[in-house]
Length: 197
Image (cartoon, rainbow, N blue to C red; front, side):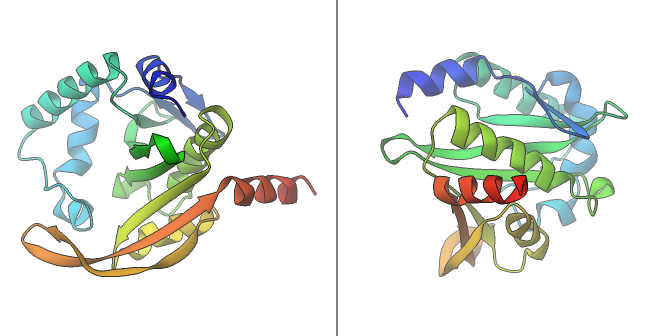
């Protein structure tokens, strides 16, 4: 993928629609919904960021992202439940390695909405964009060892575990083991063909 393609696509981020969700750009008025889960230390236990201290912090963060959308440098969607209109999490690309056509997917969901397959539903929509619109060859995900919920999502969307890097990242003052999983374009096509049978 060329840099120009990345910047054009993400500066005009499309809304994605699934059976139960909308995925759209994040907005400043998502602050209350985001703060509802972002303040929770149980949510951030296996993430690189710490709990948000107050809703003002969350609003400023969303305003920062708005500027990045305009320049095509934000690769993340708000996950919105269609039935209620509530913003319940985020999903998108944490990293894009353009010379090798590789993306890294990430997601976080409000705990009140877990256990219903919504994270996998959102992630599948992002995988489809990655492989079929952006032309990625490989999409991977990382997880901190112990994050069983995230691993279950990776397995549901067809990713294969590729191993653990011991003590690979210094996160919140501790060295953590990092697991890797991935899906290639060939894997994606095989899953699509199988689902048609």
